[in-house]
Every structure is written in C-alpha cells, then in structure tokens.
Length: 465
Image 1 (cartoon, helix red, strand yellow):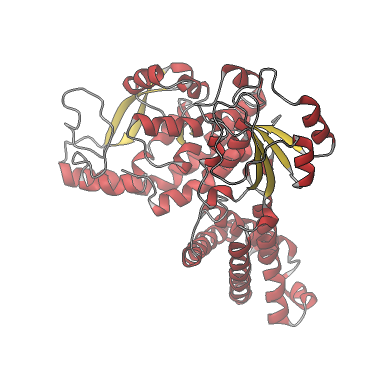
Image 2 (cartoon, rainbow, N blue to C red):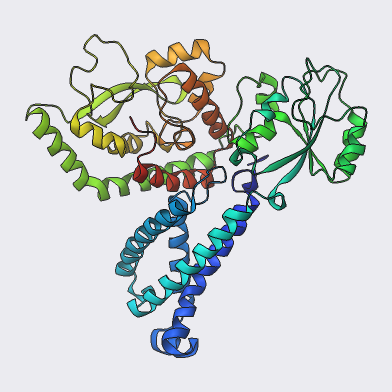
C-alpha cells in the first residue's frame, strides 16, 4: 500500500529481535541433532533432511511468540512476565506442532530431539530477551528527531511522556517557527536564531517533524529541501504521531490531510483476500470451538432455566451505515434494557450473569459472530460495530466518526488491541483514532498480526467488562 511500510508497524529493533529468535528456534533442531547423534549427517541418515522440520518448528513457535504479545514495541513488561508469556507460547506452539505432526507425519520431530531443542531454545531466547529489554530504550535504536515548531501543535509531541512512548525517537531540539501561537520552553531543548538546515546537520538529526501552528507563508522551503537532499527525512506532525502511536489524532486532522495522505484505499484484490481469510478463519473457529459453544449454552440454561434464550441479537451499524443483527451469547439478564434505552456496559455491571462474567472476560460471548462473518455482515478484523443509537450520538459530537464505517466492522480490531473497553464519549474518541489508523493502513499483513495478537487479549482477559 502506498505510503505504508512494514517499519511503520514493526520497528527495526523488533525486526532484529524476531530475526534473532527465528534463528535460535531454527538452529535448535540442528543443535539437538548434534547432541543426540554426534553429527547432523548421522541424524539425517536416520530421520531424513532436517531443514523442513526446523522451518516448521521455527515458524510455528515464532507465531506463538507474536500471539503472546512479545513483539509490542510500546508495551512495557517485566522480565518475570516475559517468562510467563514464553511458557504459554511454548504450550500453544507445542499444541499446534502436535496437530501439524498428526496431519504431516514426515515433518515430525522425535521427542528425544524435541527435549534438547526446547532446553536450548528457551535458554537462548531468555538471554536474548534479557539483552533486548536492557538495550531497547537506548539511543542506538532511536531516530534523532528535530521538531520545527514549539507551539500548540508541537505540544502533541510533548504529550508522549511515557518512556515506552518514546522508544522510537529521541528529540534533539525544537525550533520556534513563525506563526506559533505560543512557545513552550519547558523541555529545555528550545533553540532560537538558528536555521533548520544548520541545526539538522549540527545535531545529526535523522528527521525533521513539521509541527508549526501556521504554515501559510512561514515554511522554510529552501532549508527543508536542502535537508531532504542530504538524506534527512522531513515529515508532517500527523504522520509522525501516526507512526509513533499507531493512531490518527482527530483533533489535529483536517479534510485536506485525509484526502491527500497515502492510504484509505480498498482495492478489489484487497477485498478478495480479506474475504477469503474471513471465510477460512471463521469456518475454522466454528469447527474448533463448537464444544465450547455447547458448554456455554448449557451453562446459560443451568443458570437461567431451560426456557432462557442462549443467544442475543442486537442491532449494529455495519459498512456504509447499513444495519444488521450481531449474534452473541447472552451474558446479561433478559431484562438488562427493560426500558428500551441503550446503555454502555460498566465495571462490575450488575446486569451481567455469573456465566456471562466468565465468557465476557475471555470474549467467548463473541464466538457466534463467526456466523456474521460467514454471512458477510462482518469481517474478522475491523472497527467494533456500534449500536445505531450510539452512532447517531457520536457522529454529531466527534469529527470523522462516520469514516470508520467505510470498512466492515470486525470481531477483533486494532482499537480493541490498543485500547481497553470503551464506555464513554471520551473512550469513543480514543478508539476512533485507532480505528482511523486501521481504515487508513489496513492490509493482509496487519490483519494477520491483529488476529495473532488477539490470542494474547483473550488469554489474559484484557479490557473485558
């Protein structure tokens, strides 16, 4: 997709980490062969070529690591949590490999080799992770960023205060620009009376972020062109914030930016590939989880009686503003909205049943939405579908809210991964910014990444109410 690159989503440090861990996982089979047989040749004489076995182990285990949230650039986790996530990833990967070996016995790895490979891989994965966690915040991985502008718009960069939010860049200076409404000198990096190109060279800047309050007649075109010709990137504030935060700031957006920025495209090839993934994935979900669905139905009947409904249909807004009935397992009392008014779910909502509290925690109430996906009303990945009452209310008060309906709503999505459950207009604004990022940048790679990382959300019960 024009204007989108893999480095906007997966950063260089994570690419290096992933490559290193993939190499460890791949080599673990060969190391195990050396330990058990004394040489790789002897092992291959007994078992056959190892390369396909090593590739299967490495790729499936890497996907398991991704699904456990171990490649979130802005997520700050402690080393003990890394241990837990690695352990869960190994369990998931082992189950997936067992299924693969059952279907394709020729790629199976004997348990004697697997035992050695697991010990080797875990040891070196932990060593690499420990090194990475102690080095990722250092300047070697950061872009050196010069901010042109020190007014209201530039304050959006200063708002990124958390250490985890600044892993991708280091501000080396900020330059007041003509037209800035006010100048904030509190960060101690303000530099006056110096040209932008001189400063960029002197400070060894990798990029210049244009964050001035008023560009009309104030943009130093010649100086910025000199910088660009010397290999220094010149980017807009919105592009910078989009890259660093994974969302589009609606308070800074104007229609012109939406029109001329790359992205916001939905080709026929993209629609076809998305539909194919939706059909395959939703069918697999139904085939794998039907025993869980039966248990949920049984639990609902036991708690509320044999005549109590198991499913709950609710009107939602889909692509292009069309309405449809979303299908969910009922997790609230039948009289949850007896007065007919739409109400957001709250923390410890008293309307939620005992069985409902459990299935909502692990998002199991949303399993029947796989049938909405099969029908084509939803996609597996997309913005969360909202109720018409909320859409009408939010569209009036939040700019660009209706743009989220240019794609199909999803069972999971970028906003669901990056932000907790929304139950207010403020939460809706925040989630919209992530939804707009998805609408602008969605492609097959991003969809698959979101699907994998949703496993972490489900297992850890994040953001559920």
